[in-house]
Image 1 (tube, rainbow, N blue to C red):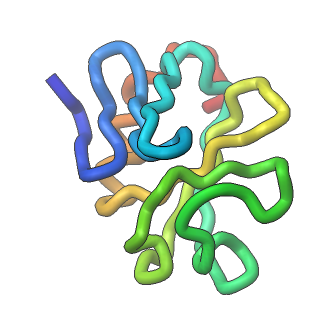
Image 2 (cartoon, helix red, strand yellow; image 1 turned 90 degrees about the vertical axis):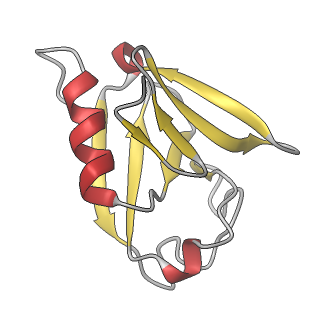
Length: 109
């Protein structure tokens, strides 16, 4: 059962599934235990709003989301790797609550 689910994101019992992450439509599975921090931010023209897929700085990677330019909140998910996944849920508050409820205690997430 999913704690949160929209077209591109699915918070399952064991991991976050990020659809449209890999070319052309591959899903990235991020176990909750690998998430070291969650950074919620307000998007702007210079901070992710215009990117519907991929990376502009080779550090952050946005999954495919054609509605991203109409959204205002994004999340960076530090998973201890060079590239940081960047997601934009349809309901940021519900997504954040579901994600944080799955991150193990003691994690800075």
